[in-house]
Image (cartoon, rainbow, N blue to C red; front, side, top):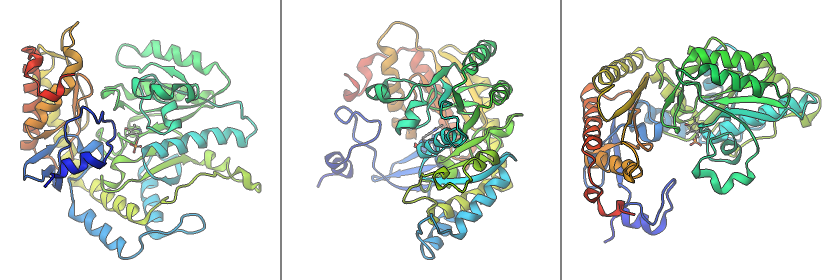
Length: 440
Ligand SMILES: *Cc1c(COP(=O)(O)O)cnc(C)c1O
């Protein structure tokens, strides 16, 4: 009898995976709190909320109950010409919590589509007002906004998107204003804003996730937004990863003194249960689409737009997120991270430790000039799996982004793995110690 992993290998094609050399996938059959339970009973501690989506633990009974009730009430209805209670309730609740200027909610399917919608809103905003020449986006050189074409275009021109570069529309890249680089980046921004065709600025607020949890301060971002607004440039906060408490406050944008015009959400939106995306915008943007002319409408939508089950999951998750208990959990995780950070920051083998709320990133210093560096990611990954912990290193950066229900004891298990990774870097573990499949 072939195992589940072998059956998978015969028929499936996994994302971000070189199928020829990747090890067989880990077969997970059940989830419980911060744990994923494999076919053979092995329990893996989920240190990254299953690709940054889970907030309150796996198979959470409250979300399960609400989803089940919704399934038995209304599973789906088209969202053009029709509406339903969970879509309205969710939009009402979110607008209450979001920065005050956010006035409208547009549903879609995932983070990439939430970004596509925001980009299209910006372009058509200017088109509808007779300024189609305003069509250039500003974005951070190391940003990640998704894998669809528009989202790829406003993301880093990294190796992953190279086959598509010729088809990606031109954007203006600026650097991330990390500590010490603020003045330089403001100069880059001013130069870009001098061009009249600039329409929008899209950014991951405070933390660039895929770039390696690169962090920068709310003060400099607020100043950048202020300068964009002086030039009539619309600002899009991509809170797909940072939303719903990850960075401390409910939304990273809460720490800004200048508010974005549009916001994108997904990932934690449903607590990690169902795929859903959502774009919000300020009143003047919505107003630019109102007209007796039907062609000024936003002609964008997906078959599953505002799916009632996904909306019910989001409402259930939001209820848990808004509870005092969740705020306390996030504060507890942030405090534990800060203590661990104190412990290892500045130690040999560590280049930098970064933290924003429940996100902790350790950048290891693997030394220079060896093929060791490129192998480090796979070595770290395997060490985590062998330690029954799920982590997904980004090169030499290993980050923790745990579900909020993760206990202090469970956090200790994660920190222990991060400490072992430091020992591994210090001892320059020879490549021959790697499992067979990691040799190229
Ligand atoms: C993951 C992510 C996206 C893309 O979301 P998908 O649901 O994977 O399409 C967009 N922006 C940011 C900041 C993300 O982290």
